[in-house]
Amino acid sequence: MTSRFPSPASAAFVGVLAALGAIAWAGCGPGPESRYYCDDGGCYQCDAYGCANVAPPNHATCKGNANCGPNEICTSAGCVATCGDDGACPKGEVCKAGFCGAPGSTTPTKKECETKADCGDGKACITNVCQACGGTAGPCPCTTAKDCSATQACVSGSCTDVKNTCKFSSECADGKICADGECLFACSDAAPCSSGFACDKGVCQPVVSGGGCKLDTECPAATPQCVGGACVKACTADPECGAGHFCDQGACVLDTRPAINCTDDLQCGGSAAPKKCVGGFCKFTCTTSHGNAYCRTIDNRIGFCAKDGVCRSQQEAEAACILSVDCGGGGKSCVDNQCK
Image (tube, rainbow, N blue to C red; front, top):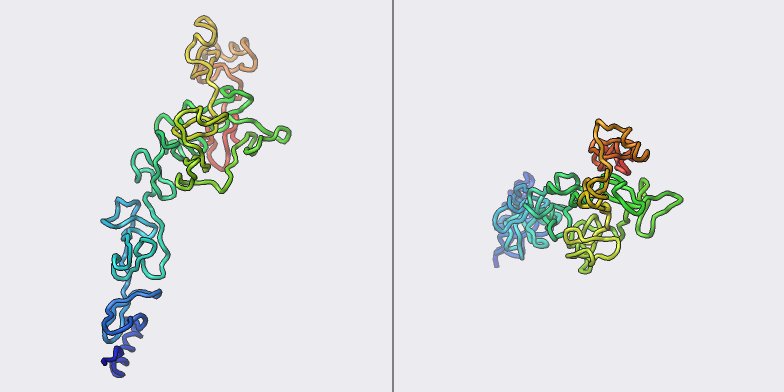
């Protein structure tokens, strides 16, 4: 029987080459018929004299699957081949969790996208995964208004229709104040928030329990939509969501909408009345020629003629902010038109 080991002379020669880094003796396989072998240390091409290391192939960088070739997927390690067994992988790699990679390497994570632009219309890029949003798929997540459509605003990390947002506390009902586009209950040490809410900068913010979520796939069947870090019910109409909530783009969310009270001037006391319907609210209108004095003759509490032609309080007329983005960052939020 022929030995699979080289002669002493050739072994000495191989040892010299090994010292130069050209050949590795590890992983030669079980017999002379083995020519390619992988173990935890790497992959090797073998012959009668020994085994040479087979380096894994380089992976092209990618932003999404569109950047990769056939049978490849974009991952944190670049474009890698998908596989069902080692035979589907190029030399130098083995099949691990459906991905081809070098032995001993960390299994990469999928990376379908880096930005919303990589996903196309109707989807958002969330933790490198393209997820359907908007329409009836739940509100799209956002960090700025640029992540939302032209008719939406970015409020508390979600895109919602501008009509669902407030600008001033006078637009809110039930003792609520406007905070970053949402009508929320005010709070203090003397007036704490109800269960499920925490007092933050003077307003009651909902508390996300259970570690929160980022993707819809992390939510259970009963509450399949991930909105603002919380798993919520899916819906087609407001009544399905229960008290204190409404159906926003297919997801039941906390109702923080302003309390619109008109659609035309007649609902504000008739066409001859000094009030008009402005943006869904009955307001006393004014002009620069009237000045503040005119508004004060109506009510000192609204004694300032604001830039939008409406008699408002001084805080609203001289608002420091409308949304938190107006506060310039630094952890500040827009609460009752003041940066806090």
